[in-house]
Image (tube, rainbow, N blue to C red):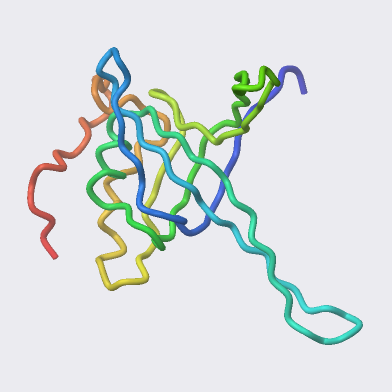
Length: 154
């Protein structure tokens, strides 16, 4: 197979309420942590074990930012499809620091709300998936993104 692919698929729980911020250029960005859990039974002791892995999620897609801002809360279960990006910066002491994040860019990626632990409707985000399309400028063969300003009928 020629070429390469940078694709990350995660299903996990949101670790805290998302942070919504704007860049100096006026672009809105959402960020939050997502925990994925692995469970197994220890063969020696028969004891159930669990390990959590934390992932930093950064959302640049305007449609998904809107969905995250309106519907995503701590504890919600999400399906995330994005790409890995590593950023570098210098700390105050001059040392180089790195962080690896899962990013949902303006084009590509996916975000689906799967469930909520606090009783909110779990399918509120079913309209949140665009499967890599740009919802703000659909082509003639793709329906426009749903208007999320309307009331959800449930």
